[in-house]
Image 1 (spheres, rainbow, N blue to C red):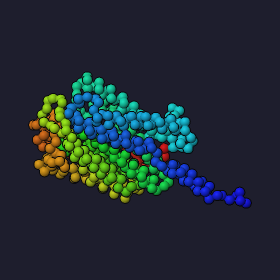
Image 2: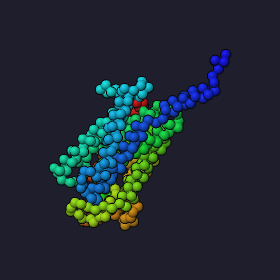
Image 3: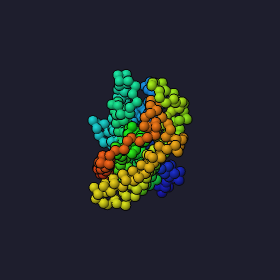
Length: 397
């Protein structure tokens, strides 16, 4: 009889072991945190690098901004490689949420991250060669920069897919909430990367042109509509747009605090500090309306929902950005908060941007045609984003 009675201390030990196993099972994997750190480093490094080009010029490849960018590739490459090895040769439990590729196993997002890391590392010598062959340009969308951007965004999308898989499998409500916030932060990093790539289109002199809306609005909805569709958080698009806004504002306010001096000529603007990006675009306004529409009209026909979301988003963005663009041209915006007075060293003082002028207005016909194209693209990209969001709801691994 006595031998069949479990000793209290033995029960406590067994309970502790079970608790530890359960905690480990519910713990968020380290590579998800590493992926978000890598993505953040790439975004911060990208904004810093553009500021470096606008303030100093490309004096050497080995700038701190470049190192922050390529840290993303190193983390994604080596961290992803470790996960592949552990998943391929580890226990069956570890293999449960993986896919197989060329005999190796890992979560789908890990394989995407490794590809992105290879693209990023490949772009480094390509970028160095490009500058040696064609000069020290200040363009964002040169071929090596495009390859670099593709690598970064692929890594960021891979991290999103990993977080979504963990979120969709999560049984614990508290763990799911944490993963939702990680997902929204990761989505904001993708949004920031797209806005960084399109920075040359988004300068304030262009904000009263149809081309400005034709490029930037479809790029915004392709992220925000899908995020709002896939996430259970009611204000997901608003939170992503809010993170973008805060992140950009931090750079507007902090970068000018650090000294910088042009090292390339010609120098049209005398600088003693880093030039920050422009004040963030007014995506918060349409994002709030998008969240209200996506949740309220969830059962609507998808093409009709895309048309409603696209039309409302474009109209709200124009209504918010158009007058704000006019404000940015006034002396009231030339201060540390809005940063309209910051000019890159290579900008001639007679340029439209430096003299706070818009591009000459388009004819009514050309403007209406451009805005019609912007509407069509916004609806099409909204539909693609809805499909993407529905797919993200189903991701398990």
